[in-house]
Image 1 (spheres, rainbow, N blue to C red):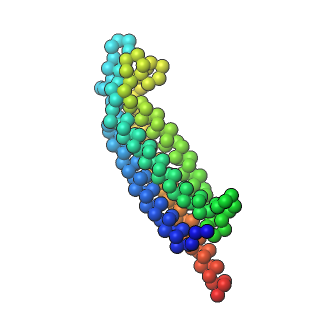
Image 2: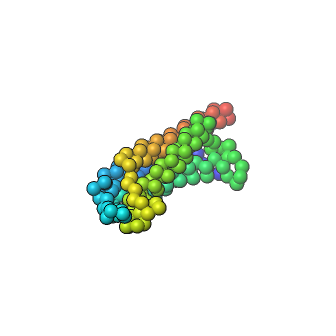
Image 3: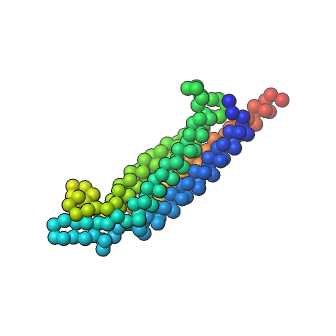
Amino acid sequence: MESPARYKFSVILSIIISLLLGLGSLILCIVSEFKRNKKEDLRWNGKLCYLPSSQAFGLGIAALVSFFVAQVIVNSILFKNSCSGGKRNAQHKIPTVARLLLLISWVDFGVAVILLITATSMNRRQPYGLGWLNGECYLVEEGTYAGSAILILVTISSVIGSALLTIKTNQADQGRKIHTMG
């Protein structure tokens, strides 16, 4: 079982790493919004369409990877410390509000990932006759990456809030245990 000081350190370190990765992902989404293919990039030969690859493709992949890692880091630390060997670890528990925030973070994470994957794949090269879907070219709607950025912000805020509530609850529990023993 992990000591309270070590637990607190690992959660705070995971919060910092997740915050940095989450903010990086958010910035990459905003840059992708400006770098995505525009209507003037579309080439039409009368029957078939063509869209070149845009910088938003690589930026979107980087945003996805950093967002995924940010989400997984804090969650893995929280769950590792609250569940050990299939049994609940009474020393480090996740409060109900923190669990609700984790649920919100995973729902937002899922929606943001779907938006990012779709938008990013649309910014890949769409050759004549192949397009993005059924041989047709598709452009990413304005605001899709910005919406993903907002979802990333909500997700990271929720998961960090959950981690902070867990630390606060566990500190309060430790304080009560010390006072009752002495």
